[in-house]
Length: 213
Length: 146
Image 1 (cartoon, rainbow over the protein chains, first blue to last red):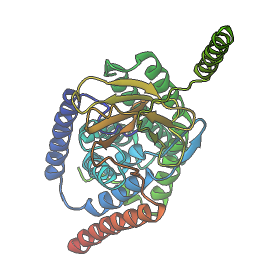
Image 2: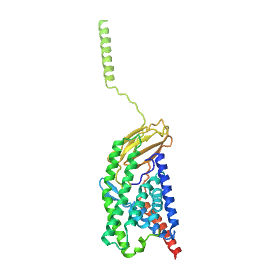
Image 3: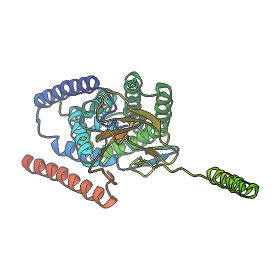
Image 4: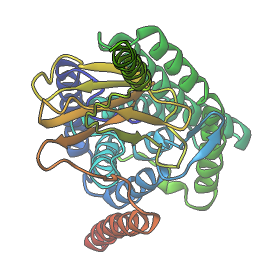
């Protein structure tokens, strides 16, 4: 899911950085407008660590292998902190493990961060303290699945529309669609994982899910 | 005299036959040096980057592909550079938006072998270091709040 250096043209990479700059600026502005801007930093820091190591967990889906993204989970728990947290984790993954790249950091942040923002809005819009456990589980499952599914869709759209002229476009498209299909089990796994984690937090420490905005 | 002429003719025929036989078994040798790199692409979980599209860029034209091809089932690509073009050759693997770029120096100080992979221990140490930093950040801000 991480696009490495050299796969996209300079223009696409620049556009990715532009969108990332806008999203980060918007998130920071919203954080600063909150009641206690620094209150959620510990939570954001720990979930940045979780997102960072998630890329090392390989789930074999023959013929490929996939790794959890957790962007739906981050969106649900962190709200406006999600995008900056994902950006920091992607930067660390790129410089430490070579997952993704520096030139493609912006576009990777768009692919994984924008769905997290959408998940944050949906989870907070439909969550309420009086809803049943089943209703909350369904909402959490949808949130987690949607984060991964939207990322896969963005990943495919960007790659399909910006295939370089010097490679076999048809072969690349087939490879992209095959890779995207390999993520279908992950969409379900992420939904189950997100539902489990959010339900657990709701039972033991519900204040962690409260908004600060 | 006739006897001498006959002997000379016989020797001539023998020599012609002998040289003809030698020419029929002649072998000509030529040799050229050739340098081939075996470049192996693997995902970081060890799965081969099989059937990836490979694009080679020569040092004198880094924008246009010098050659294109694909990796085999084991993720291997056999790259034979044009040694008349010394410099850094760029070989890019690509499959479904994944892949990477290898730079190989060809010339007087040609690269022999190299690997960009980290060992599991290195990966673990880096992961622990980053996690520790992020946990430290969390604890710092938690303490500040109190």
